[in-house]
Length: 176
Image (cartoon, rainbow, N blue to C red):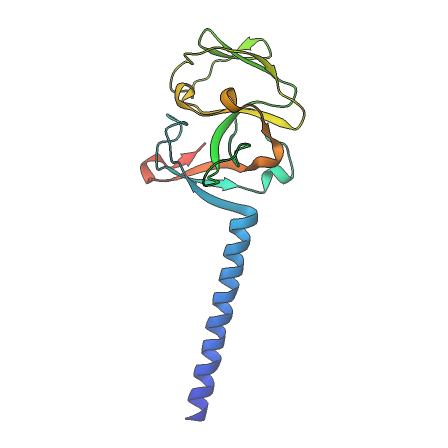
């Protein structure tokens, strides 16, 4: 009887140890390596649909700077009621000049051909130069996105990570 109790107790200790290791790994991965986010609005249509779920790489930007064209998740640089991160595409890096005219994003004086946007912008925006340490981000649904053309530049420190993969629903799964 003592041997059975001893074996049972040893087995429970191993289970507890395994559970603890799994929890520590899950916490570490979520906070430092990768995290899943869902898409709450249509601001990134057609690239991301409402309720799509994406994996966000939180490590890469520790080794390189974010680049134009990447879809990122970030904390907004303005107060919100629930601190929900936003997801947008980088269209301007530090030193770039951005404007919107005649239905086009103008980057450093050159109209951009953006195959990923829902439709051409129905607004104009005077040229602005992206300061050092900041980015200019826009939703792919240019006419229905609360982005840098409204609220200004995004500080680098607000970027959480690079959205790299849509994983849900399965019929939308794939890279970004």
